[in-house]
Length: 115
Length: 112
Image 1 (cartoon, rainbow over the protein chains, first blue to last red):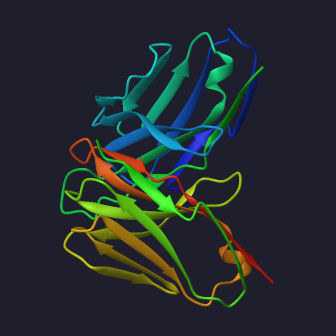
Image 2: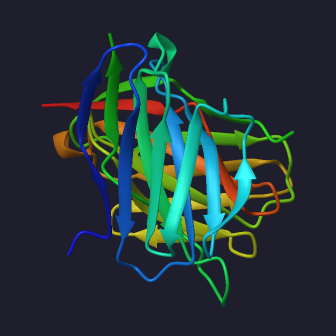
């Protein structure tokens, strides 16, 4: 029944490693997002994909590479992890085309800790 | 550039009190405004989405109002309960509606 799911929920890793976070939505939405919530709890957009095409890349370092194999999945791969990457990463989705109401639905988040 | 702010940053009230959370945005040309709730260590739960053509939206004890011209929205919580304790976030679509810009959040604590 979960609408937007993410794995893993927690991720602890060392600096310099490469890691991936997976996201899946079963709402039939055509648009998916990655947001980052920093230590001060501020949420900011990172990427947005519509029908598997990148439509927003919010000046995120190119160590972050999103991949959308299909409309229901948007994964986030991070290379050469740095201490400053520690945050909670949220996946979200919404239906962009059609009559609305265009609400965004969020996953439970992945808490990434880089040591 | 759209900026969204919320006041107060934190609020502590006794159970049963009615309360109002405020959200302000600098660019009034918005499609809608969404209110979310975030529990500690959890994801975001959408509470209400109010369209730009609407002035109010209600769900149970929650009522959201929108005044586009003044760049403000309020979330009214009636008869607050300890279970309402959470951080409340407002967000507006930006970038042609392709992303959400979030406010700074109000951390609410409802005490017994």
